[in-house]
Image (tube, rainbow, N blue to C red; front, side, top):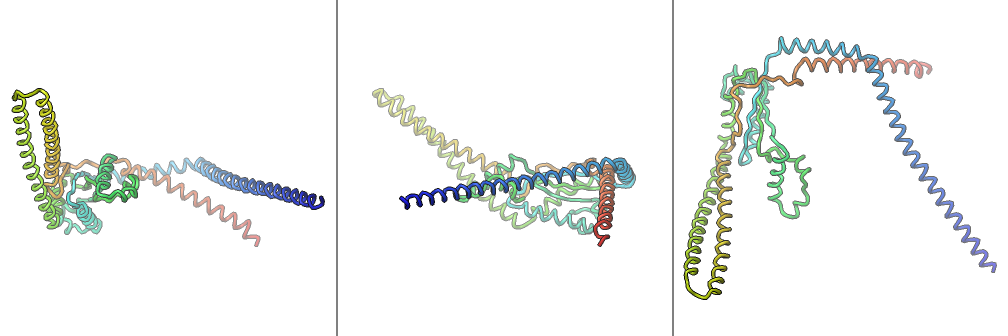
Length: 360
């Protein structure tokens, strides 16, 4: 009996200890959650306090900042409309073939580097224009032309070349973010110049600098020969299939003219019609393949196709974000705001130094 009572007391003590441990665990978890909530609340209060102080600062100095913005806008307007030379812009859309987009970007970067270095003699030589005309060119740049449809088609072509295991490692969003420039179908070449009539003179030199490359010329010739071989094979197959279709028609007409049993005629006709349908399907597939080859021959007729040329007369640049009156207004506002903020910060630092460091 005593042993049983001792065992019961031990079990009761153990259960109480377990209850105490669980209670302490919940208390600990509650304190942890409370601490996390208080931490985020304090961050929110601090951010709200900073935002409120910033709004009060803007309200107190708004008139000064607007005045500074108006002064900046006035100075910018004087420069924009009295001193700044008028700039014109035009663009050309191209479709590079055989991987020539890489050379296109290298050439455009080369032209831009010559402009930035004021090396107008070499620029004039590269673009086959006079040095005076080259000095009017302010900027040449290229960028891929893309939209959702173009990106989707590019992704489809890319996935079509992968095996089933690799496809699972690539998703559309990742591909679009890391898509190389040479994978885009169309590219936009933009030129900015002080001369609005120079753009017509730039198209041929830019295109010829790529088409005269021997490597791309060899690739183009090889591709043309392969496509022509494919086209001739398709034409021969289509001719043979067309002859076979004519033969099936003759056989079917001949068997229909026989005066045999109706059942035999019916079975023969069904068999011939099935074979004729099969030949017709093959004939249509060959025609579709031939249309694709003809389209590819047309698209790859040149190393780089010009989809849309430069305008004969450039368009005057009137974008608001390039207008120095707007730039001056924004700059004046921001400059004075930063100046007053640094002044206020310096005042706070001086006060802190006097109250805390001065006593020491």
